[in-house]
Image (cartoon, rainbow, N blue to C red; front, side):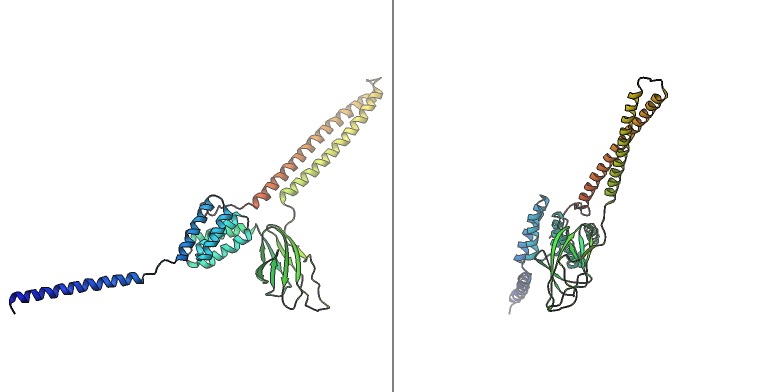
Length: 328
């Protein structure tokens, strides 16, 4: 074999090794691309619905946004979507649902939720707490099925009360072996109700009979401070008005006396009647003026109280200045 042939064989071997290396690298890269997971089509559908919800929320179309977010979460359960669902429920005055969804967000998101968002949700939950009523069912067997206005909401628990938006409700509690318990309650914002009506065993001839009213007892409530002040001002105003009326009657009688003594204006009875008349008129004017001021104050206090009560029930997005802050 000549020296030139040896050189060509060496070059051929070198090129062969190089081409083999390129081929192996290319095959490895192609294999790697094959192993890369493809995008889940369900995730893409959910993401599209999520962005539609974001747009609707920015337009204050909360009901439509809620429908898109709920569809997104059912299609592909991303925990961030729960946050936006809760915000929509809050904007729609579904405070009880918003509380439940915020808590699900904290549970599902877990450690992945930034600390600032966790704190913000905790503040939102504190704000929502005063806008709902809590109904605690006592003397009711555990794990009984509960319906609220015809909708199943779970089972009874001694630890977790029912959380309801303000309003009137019909509650039915059912459990095998017991007669159904029918309750009607009127839940106010911030109220804590305790229902202590036991269920009656089927076929039982003794024991407490379930009543329709349910024996709901409100632990707190009563008149608001501004309402009390308004009532007090109004009553005081009426009292001063009564004093003014007495002075008016007295001044009229004194005027009649002055008419009788007018033939002798220098006489002592006339002068005394005139002095008493002027005093009665003065106190009548003072009494009516104070009465008017007190009644006006009472009306103003009452109006302010109604505005405050309405404001207490209006939800704001203060903890989240930008509205929805979660991304898909």
